[in-house]
Image (cartoon, rainbow, N blue to C red):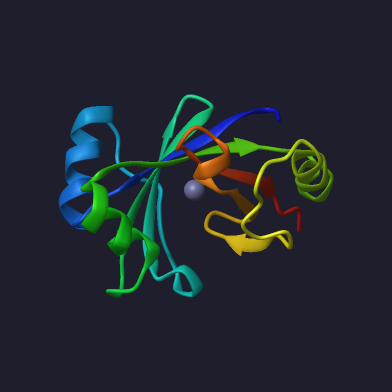
Length: 134
Ligand code: ZN
């Protein structure tokens, strides 16, 4: 794994949180993107070489809605940048981690993504992401 690519934070109201985080970070978000397959609206802030991803549910059965129901707003996942997501998935499976989607899917911000079940990672949802090169 190369670096922490972003930290995902579950929020109830993306507009309000965009205003809050732009005050906190001293800069506006650089993009808003809906990932319909996951039922989320996302926004991204660049902080040095890392990013903050805010996630808002777009429907009641969205994973983000369920997360907020259970735990409230807060850190939802940590995403690591990887060079070869298929190789990393195979390596982590071999190491005994539970990979939630063995076939990487298209995530927000031009990435191929896969998730590890928090049960196998001390309660932290881990995202692997590989930039899609055009
Ligand atoms: Zn993410």
